[in-house]
Length: 99
Picture 1 (cartoon, one colour):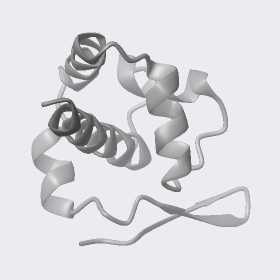
Picture 2 (spheres, rainbow, N blue to C red):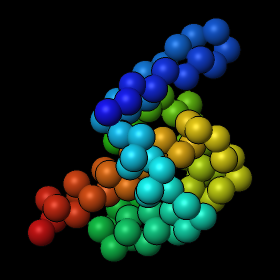
Picture 3 (spheres, rainbow, N blue to C red):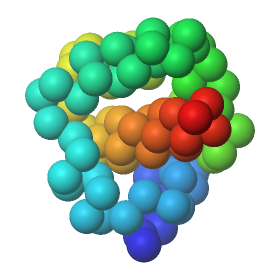
Picture 4 (cartoon, rainbow, N blue to C red):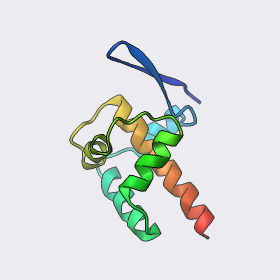
């Protein structure tokens, strides 16, 4: 597992330490945003629910628009890939609980 520290504007932020490098590389591609949105809809959840869960796990997303940019592919960075991989992991956990 990796521990990702992102330095933004002089402060360090821990971002979802439970995402492994392998998960980040395999799970994130051009269709990840669509996959996330469709799986959320199937669960009856919204991106706002996902935003709240990500922040509760330490993602430190400043606004929900930041998550929208990541899921729509407007902002492609290392942090966005980690957030998207974490989103897929959270959604998988929600799907397991629903079964």
